Amino acid sequence: MEKVTYYGETDGIALEQMVRYEKFDMRVKHFHTQYEIFYIIEGERVFFFNNREYIARAGDLILVDSNLIHMTRSIVGSNDGHSRIILYITREKMESYDQMYPSLHLVRFLENYYGVYHLDREQQALILSLFRSLRHFLNSREHNYKVGIDLEILAWFFKLMSFVRHQRQEVPNDSDNPKYKAAYGIADYLSENCQRPISLDELAERFYLSKSYICRIFKEVTGYTISEYTNIHRIRRAKRYLEETDMSISQIASALGYESLTYFERTFKTYMTMPPLKYRKTLNTVTYTNVPNPHFSARPPQ
Image (cartoon, rainbow, N blue to C red):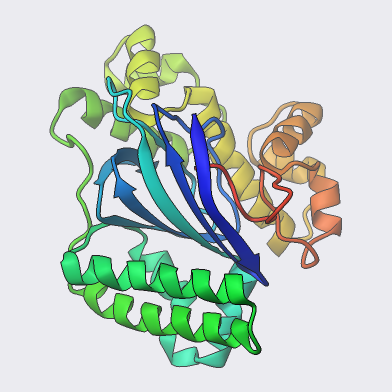
């Protein structure tokens, strides 16, 4: 059971507060073009990104970079819910901030400093103050309210960048645990070699583990199956090829190890909601997400 206690949006910005009263695991493991400023009010969550698992608790801030492959779920064995606030900012909006104030380098900052951060009381008060201000502007819609929103966000980022650069990110969960160590190693190997088919036999031989054990621990730690994790990295790379090269769809499919063009197109559509050719044709006109939302195009379920 869940309850959205607040939702508001304007150009390139959306703010959502939600309470979930029981266990919740993200149904779609994904990446998307917007940025997420995720703050946990109550409860705790597991986040998986950059091939590692992290634990975030009440008072923690999670910065999610654009196009970051990630998922979030409940702590294993826990049926407790959580309360959180998420500020969604589209990539286009963030780039517009960089154009306004080039010295801030916000896009580069989030590329380098995404992760889980433990906030002290002052830092927690700062982000809650930001959310209150944004909510006020979104509700009032007073003259120049969009300018007010931009100024609040930019001022907050200015302060955030200072303390984040002097604060260590949360470390991955149980890195010394043999199960986690193996799962992390497998995740690294899959992401580094996603452009070619990787069999369970190859993984078993490389990591000296049985195929059944590999499948079980990988799913337990990451939340993905082996094939899901390989495909999502392939599709993210395919997206870049479509955006940055003139390679044909069949060339991209071949370069990423897909023997069937039909399977590649179907897999791409699973994550991007449209086939690759349509995605290429509509580049620079739409913000994409693999989870359509009637309110805000860049807002996935978390």
